[in-house]
Image (cartoon, rainbow, N blue to C red; front, side, top):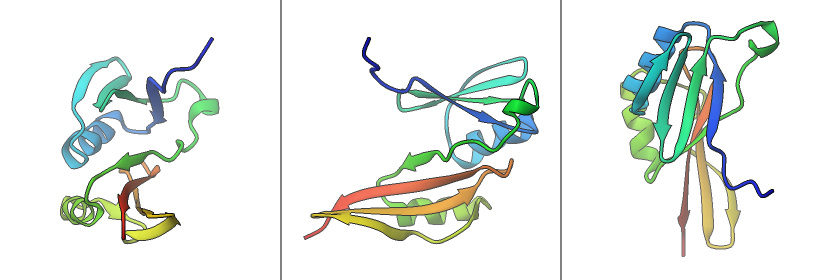
Length: 123
């Protein structure tokens, strides 16, 4: 057996309708469908599942999702204008050779922490 890729990432939410609006309207992810207490979004080949936790074991904060963007400053400004709450401004995380990795962390409307990330070549 060989794992090929991550096919789906689940994010626990407290208010499904509020979460759907955040990921659809503010982040601009396409909503694929909803089914009961579940909502499925598309993110360039990876499905994002928002769900109301079935029990307390699954009601913890989610893993951090790192959303790759081409221009982190433009994306930061656009999401800020949509009232997305950022924890920090875009900043350099790592420089590996000629590649710089920049990130800006934000909270979704459910209190989960996620990030924008951008990698580019510098001379």
